[in-house]
Length: 112
Length: 119
Image (cartoon, rainbow over all chains, first blue to last red; front, side, top):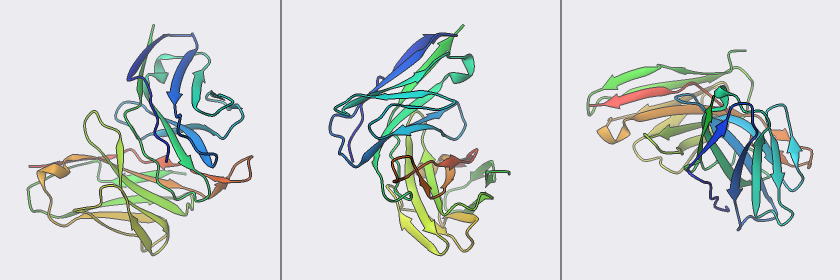
């Protein structure tokens, strides 16, 4: 599975868009990009996933570059409750039982 | 729906003691997982199950055993606890879901965690 690289930490002002980058330059054609987040002391929470098209749901938008070597998770209007560690994970499709590998992630601090 | 629940929430053990952590889900999910998370680290997969009666090793299985006798429950056992097993343990489950691409993807639902200390 492709490895991912994320900045260890980022700050964002409340109400502004938070843009979290992820590099996955060795991604294969049969691998999804997943984003999860973990709010302090809680279990991780699924946010969104994508293959090659941009995706949007009620929580966030995912922008994947055309060559699929990097992606950006966008929280359009960050709130204090979005303060969390955000994990970018690359994993192949096919078997929903495949394990996800959670690396270090990006610690996002939303400030008032 | 209660989602994914874990029992107990906290536990302190002495070295050499045994215990079982219980994970239950009421969403009829096929897949279940046990992770551990050490301070300042990401999650590491211990064992997982792709269905009732089946289990498989994850990234860090040594010192743990699991069982999935019922679809809704996934048990994690420590036969002889060691201080290195002090951690927060998370259980997760996931359904078989197919995305807009027509291929399955992995949306895992996590429990609240069990904080285990081994003295």
